[in-house]
Amino acid sequence: MLELGSLLEEKTMPKVGFISLGCPKNLVDSEVMMGIVARSGYELTSRADEADVLVVNTCSFIEAAQQESVDTILEMAEHKKFGRARKLVVAGCLVERYREQIRQQIPEVDAVIGTGEVEHILNAIEGELRAAPPGAPAFLYHDATPRVLSTPRHAAYIKIAEGCDHPCAFCIIPQLRGNFRSRRFESVVREAENLAAAGAREITLIGQDTTSYGEDLGLHDGLAELLARLAQIEGLAWVRFLYAYPNRVTQRLLDTLAAHPRLVKYLDMPLQHASRGVLAQMKRGSSGAAFLRLLERIRRTIPGVMLRTSFIVGFPGETEADFRELCDFVRAAEFDWMGVFGYSDVENAASHALAAKVDAETIADRRDRLMKLQRKISARHLRRFIGQTVPALIEGPSRDQEFVWEARLEGMAPEIDGKLYLTDIQPQPDGAPARPGDMAMVEITKSLDYDLVGRVIELRESLSHAAAPLPMHPARQISTATPLRILA
Image (cartoon, rainbow, N blue to C red; front, side, top):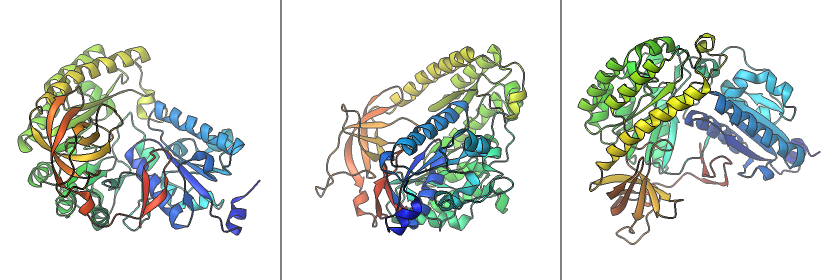
C-alpha cells in the first residue's frame, strides 16, 4: 500500500478532496482547512476517485443532517477500500458528538478532528494528530488564516463569531461549537477589504448569533458598528448578515441598515414559534404579539425590507391550538421567505427529556400545512415586483433551459431564498459580455411562487473592471464544484 510518506519522498504531493456538509458556517471551516492544506503544497481535487486523502466535514444539527454525514463517510470509505484514497479524515460537528463511536465503528477512518481542531488538519492528514484538546471548542480563524474560497468569485461568507451562549432547548450548538466568541473588529474589516479587492461584490456575515457580535469584546451594538464600517468599503455592492436573534435586534442596528446603501434591506431572523407556551418550553421566551410589534418597527424603520424567518413544528407539547396560533401569526406577519423544520429529537438537547412528543406523521402534516400557507404569501409578495425595474446581482448561466441566466435581488440571500431568472441579457456598452458578479437593472416581467423572471435593461457595473481576482486553484471542491481560490 502506498503511504503518504512515500508520495512526499517522491516529491509528488498527495491530492486532497473535501466534502463539506451543512451550513455556511461549516463551509467556512472547510475553506480554512483547504487553505491550510493548499498552503502546505497539497493539491486539491474535486474527484473522489483521484484523491489520496478524503476529508468529510460533517453536520450533526438534526437527525437528517447526521444521517447524511454518516452516509457520506461510508461512501468515501468505499474509495479507501477499493480506490486510490489512502486516508480518510472526518471533521466537524459529528465528531464533537460521536468521536469515539466513529473511530470504533468505521475502521476506514484514520483521523477525526472536531470543530475546535480545524487548524490541525495537516496533523490529521499526516498522521501526527494528538489527543483531542480538553474542554469546549475554542478555535476562531482570523484575517491572516489561509482560506480557499469555494463560493463564486463575486460572493463570499465571513464568519464573524463562533459558538453560542443561548440556552435553546432544542439546540446543541453550544456543545458542538463552544461558547460564543467574536472575532476582532479590525480582523473582520481587513478580511472584507481583501475580499473586495479580489473582486467580491457581496459579503455575507455569518455566525450562530450575529446580533451578539462584540458583546464579549465589550462592544455595545457591535454588529451595527461593524456593518457601518463595512458599508464604507469601495468595491462591495451588498453586505448582508444572517441569523438575527430577535431580542438582539436594536434600534441602532435597524437605523444602520436603513442609512447605508450597501447594506441590503433584508433581515433573516429565526423566530422558531409564535405560541408563548411553546416558546417558553423552547427557552426562547417572548410571544407572537411581541414579534409582531418588532416586525412593525423593522418595517417602519426600513421601508421595503424583505424578511425571512424559520419555525420548528412538532416541538414536544405543541398542541393543535399552538400550531393554529403559529398559522395565525404567519398570516399576520407576512414574511417574504420562510423555512419550516420538523422537530428533531436530539438526545443531547434539553428538549429530549420533555414528555408529550409529537408523532412523525403529525409533524410532517403541520410542516406541509404551514409551507402551503407561506407559499401563497410569498407568491403574493413577489407579484408586486412585476413591471418594476430593480437592481440585481447577476449570478451566472441558468441550469433551467427555459432561461438564459440567473440573478438575485438584494432581498434574496444566496443559497437560501428564491432567484431572479433572466430571459434576456445584453452585452455591456463596450460590447463585452456580461459576467457573473455584474450589477444590472432588470425589468421584472413575471412572478412565480418563490422566484421572479425578468430581462436586463442595463448593465451598471462590471466585475471585469474590478481589481485582480484571487489566484485560481486548478481544483474544484467536491461538494460545490465551484472554482477554488486561495485567500492568504
